[in-house]
Amino acid sequence: MDALISRLTDLLGADAVLTAPADVAGYVEDWRGRYRGLACCVVLPASTQQVSDVVQACARAGVPMVPQGGNTSLCEGSVPRADGEPWVVISLARMRRIRSIDIANNSMEVDAGCVLAQVQQAAAEQGRLYPVSLGAEGSCQIGGNLATNAGGTGVLRYGNTRENVLGLEVVLPDGRIWNGLYGLRKNNTGFDLKHLFIGSEGTLGVITGATLKLHPLPDSHATAWMALASPTLALEMLGRFQQRSGGVLSAFEMVNDVQLNIVLAHVANRRAPVSSRHPWHVLVELSDTGGEQVLQDALQEVLAQGVEDGLVLDAAVAASGAQRAAWWEVRHSVSEGNKKAGMGINTDPAVPVSAVPAFIERATEAAHRILPGAPIIVVAHLGDGNVHFIPQASFEQWRAFQDADATAHAVKHAVNEVAHALGGTFSAEHGIGQVLTDEMALFKPGVEVDLMRGIKALIDPQALFNPGRLLPSASPRPGP
Ligand SMILES: Cc1cc2nc3c(=O)[nH]c(=O)nc-3n(C[C@H](O)[C@H](O)[C@H](O)COP(=O)(O)OP(=O)(O)OC[C@H]3O[C@@H](n4cnc5c(N)ncnc54)[C@H](O)[C@@H]3O)c2cc1C
Image: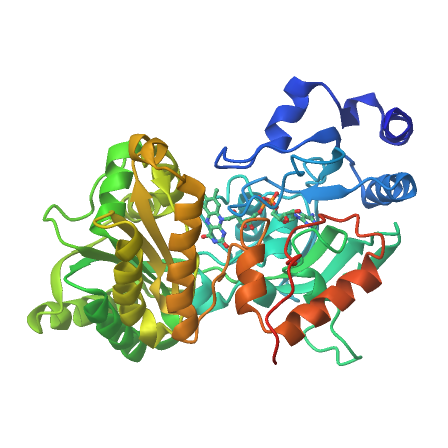
């Protein structure tokens, strides 16, 4: 290991190879502070060539590597393992260059270490929108977003990360650099290889650059906060907004009262958008270029009808940009609030949008069979069917459990079974990491897992990239 560290120091310089426990600490613990791995060093390459040099050195030494972006993974996938030989963490933190923006092509080429908010800002300065948006956008990196195919609050209108990328640059596990930075919207020359690396969670090499798709930057928004009695009524309102406003509906985010109260109690400077208390809440937004009045008219019309028909119990319309921003801060504070509030059993399923109310009802019954009466946090991207369904216990209750890990596992599995039975998935946007590989073996069709294993063996025959993550070690279920 000393020889490898010395070789990496020769390649990158001493300040780009961290070995002191205090320097390494922030790179080996996951965002929630629930898992701490072992690293022989953290390297901070500053260019694609340096990433390639690092990968070749580690491959020659046979040492496992984990690429790391902002380390905001919610699946413990971005940190090294705690057992066995220590790994090398390849942090992209020094690769933060916006390489170019092509306005006419509506695209931008960036280093994979660019922070998501930095990319959004650079696009906005040119009158363009990079539409992927999530609570971790001030820390997560484009490379991490691509490696996890991140979703967030813009999926309803713009799709997830996969749908907002035109090309990739990747350092492969043998150190070769694949330059696939095409800025093309049409390219039917065989397999579209970028899609193999999107969602690969660091198991197929290091994404070092990307060509991203840009959109016109909306300058008009109409935003409302609605309080409702049930997810079924929220779904009815979603349909009405879609029908009235078509393609300009840009967000439809639902939280329950449990979730809202946690944010208000645990995150500083957050205020309830409506003063009355109700079980369900939706943040709805229409966005477009030009003509705010048109958006406001559509928003108010649907809201007023919803109130008249008894679907909406209370509502407020954002009167200023500052108020809109404050409501979005409430929405984007859910993970921070939940982290402080207690032990949440996090799940990330998606079901067909029409099945969301049934999912919430049945998942609640399933969770309460194991944890009777546990508060359930629900935060849902209702417009795309993704429900973060989070049974919760206080830290004290959690410590009192006989076997907390087994209980959490049983609850997660019960919730995922409900999603599966409704034609859904157990992982909609956070990925698999190391926490969902068992579920992968149970729910993913055997043929799909076999194909994924074949691709992994082809691209990373030494199995040095993020081993034990994403792919299950157990046999997948048989059948198609
Ligand atoms: C407050 C909060 C809110 C969140 N909200 C959402 C949300 O709404 N939607 C959502 O989808 N996710 C959300 N997440 C999860 C997380 O932010 C995303 O998964 C994000 O895309 C991870 O990016 P990252 O740069 O932090 O990656 P990391 O956490 O560093 O890594 C994640 C995975 O990607 C791999 N990886 C990272 N960089 C590279 C690279 N350059 N090349 C190859 N592999 C790489 C890692 O090995 C790891 O497997 C949230 C997280 C937090 C903490």
